[in-house]
Length: 217
Image 1 (cartoon, rainbow, N blue to C red):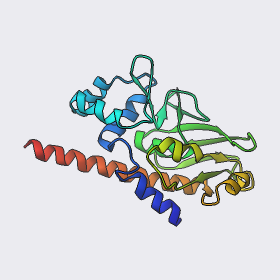
Image 2 (spheres, one colour):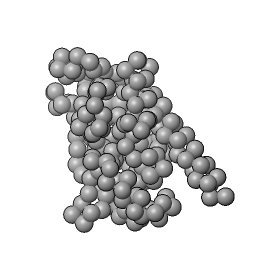
Image 3 (cartoon, rainbow, N blue to C red):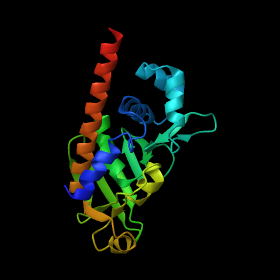
Image 4 (cartoon, one colour):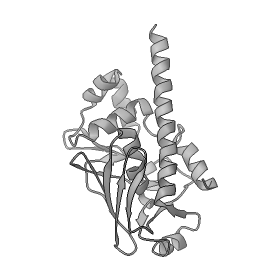
């Protein structure tokens, strides 16, 4: 893992960059994966948290997407179209960035079919991602861009909007020229980075559950 990737993993899994706590975010991902808007009261019921606490946590994250009725439709995984199509169990979803498409299958414990488009050439990139491996990459030369911004107050604008699939390292060259602090890595290496992040999130959620259990006894 490169120094940039290692630092980014630590930041995104910290209070600075993670946004919602894993104890809230992971259940929200599973609800969003059903393809229907999620009411805050539904998330509160699933997580066993007071509805007011859930609403306050969501309100603190400026990137959270809502529909006209105030229901959640996106938080990393989204029901609104983006460049990154993410299909799970026949449900058409989307993600905020390329790395998300490699992260969410591990968190959801499902296989996803990913379709994206290079922002430089318009070349389609197709990936099949299981819960524990990438099983198909087309074209085989595809890479993922990565950046470690100074300001992570808005994860989507600062980070996600610059994390793309490219058809090859050459295809990514214009992006690298405009982002001298960025880097690109193979889809397989990006998956390993995403899997490291996923395991950390799951560990944090388990620890959070343990703390809640102890405090209730």
